[in-house]
Length: 258
Image (tube, rainbow, N blue to C red; front, side):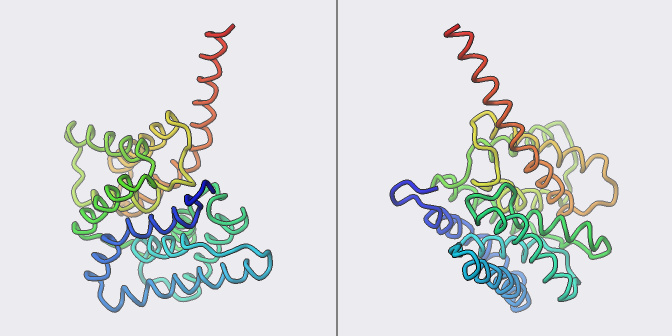
């Protein structure tokens, strides 16, 4: 991720700028408690980035702040300090730092952390996101697409699938803010999402399709829980979609050139 001025930290900085409407809206709604919550995740992620920098000469990344924001907004409430530290450490180390840092990771560290929280502490309640956060996530997506740092086909594929489900009469209820925030903060990751054009469309469509499937058949699941689960499965499928896209391209080229 280094092409002139477009190194990984430039992309991370633009992603943080795009996330400002979402971050400010969430801080206004949650107040001092939200600020404290964000600070806890920032410090935890920052400490592990510092440890890796000293141990492996690996520079920290501004993307850690984006991970902290996603965790502060989407993490289950009423988790004790040990659970928060353990989950965040697991996600940041296993999903990001162990692969060489942001830009080389396969899965989004916030997605892995949230999934770990859901599996490890199932009794903890997921947050109910206000509708204002849903609109703020749209602003983040629009700014990120304008900057060129968010994958457009992933976003359009997900929104198109959700839009078709809405036209078909699926009652989303109050789930749409969580699904949109999950798309903005977890799925539309320029590193962890698919990289080929077809793969990106399929990646976004899978997220939207899984959200629709879970809403229809997963009883008593919280909207944020649905968004996190769909984001994790869509991220795991991203390499497969790229392989399918490359295989189809090779097949077309072989047919054309013999």
